[in-house]
Amino acid sequence: MVLTQCSPQMSNTFKNNNLNKLKPQNLDWNSIQIEMKNKLGNDIYESWLKKINLVEEFNNYLLLSVPTRFIRDWITSRYLDQILQVIKTHNKNIIRIEFKIIDEKNLDTKTNFNKENFHLIKNQENVSFIEESYLQYNRIDPNKRFENFITSSSNKLAYEASRKVSENSSSYNPLYIYGGVGMGKTHLLNSIGYELKKNNKIMFISAERFMYQFVKSIKANDMVKFKDYFRNTDVLLIDDIQFMNGKEAMQEEFFHTFNALFDRGSQIIVSADRAPNKLSRIQERIKSRFSGGLVVDIQKPDFELRKKIVQKKSDELDSLYSGQFKISEEVKEFISNEITASIRELVGSVNRIVSFSRIYKKMPTLSETKVVLKDLLNLTENKVTIDLIQTLVCKFFKISKNEMLSSRRSRYLVRPRQTAIYLTKILTSKSLPEIGREFSNRDHTTIIHSVKTIEKLKQEDSEMVDNINKLKNQILYNKENEI
Image 1 (cartoon, helix red, strand yellow):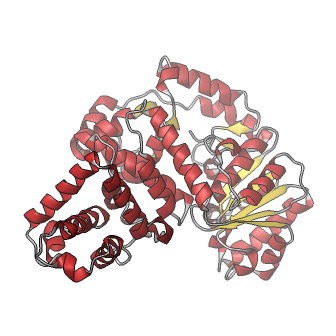
Image 2: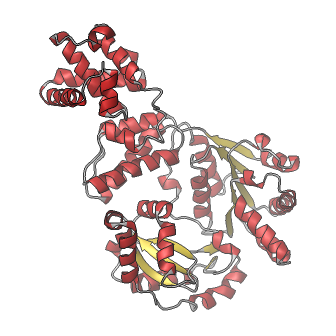
Image 3: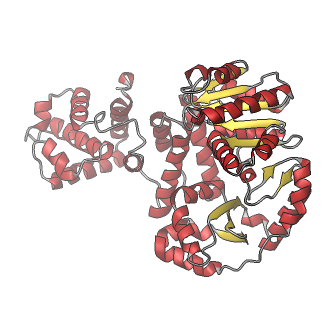
């Protein structure tokens, strides 16, 4: 739902009028669901789209509900365009879809939801429902709060500074938070806005949206309204400030807006992907203003943080699906070790595992996990090669590579050979014929037999399990002390 912060005067103007603009639901949602099922397939429909409900239909957009944030994010990132296409065949005026997270267990009917939520809106003095306005981009996500922001040494300073600002107990103005993509900057800005919106007028907007509305206001000859709104807020949160680079006119307006807010004692919080002095094509006086406050960075997630996030996400999904899809400790450990680029990719990898589980009705093995996450893994085909596996297996069993690749069938050679073939199968994406060629042109049936033999031995022989795990650790993580 589009809930935005504005002044009390604007609230009084819009509040009652807009609550009366709600239209009755004219769309046949059952027909739309049938079309989505036909268009996207039964598996996708049953796993994701079936959970969407129509809450309210407005002039040019729909408010839909889903039971969890995870489902909302999955749908919007993968199927939103197709869903909108289907909906537009029923009502060509619909140009946008909004999602509201509603736990259906706690609702009797959609009518109850509508009544309770619009009653809530009516009683919020600083919140208005405003359609067709740039204010609609001022969204505070109630799911991004301090309570669910996971910390470790890599982001602790940024977290603590944000908490101080939200408690009005700091003199950090501006607060400048920087870090790479997907590190949690937007989460922290949203958390600050969520805490401060109770008693303050909040503006939370991205630099890209600020730029868009600035240009739009110039074209509409409506800069007075633009300036009045941005310069009369209590708290300005602006995300991804680096996107202002090179836009001289907009930087000029932002500079004066910054000064006006600073002079009236308003709090300013800015996020970017780099430190102020590293910003390119941004006016020096703006960078100087940013550097004059508290500058904190969010570093790449360390192993402690990655492990916490994977565990928390896994616990949430386990609770959501009543234990149906429990990620193994081996897979969780693997994800924590290998997905190091950003928190967003880390969460995305867990979502992929669950999606795989829902489609195939089973949890993926480690080798299947590698395939599912192949594009995210630091572990590349160049890192794990058949030659590396053969070399390490030979070292482990104290035989030469020539002996292992020979046609001899001595027991002390057969078992290492089968072990190397098994590890190649589970740790690379090579096909059976490709593996056979690397093992002295052995037939693919020999490769299958070797894999099945090792899998059977793992069930019967604890020493074999131990050997396989040691070798995997050596191959994947280069842990010399574990062999």
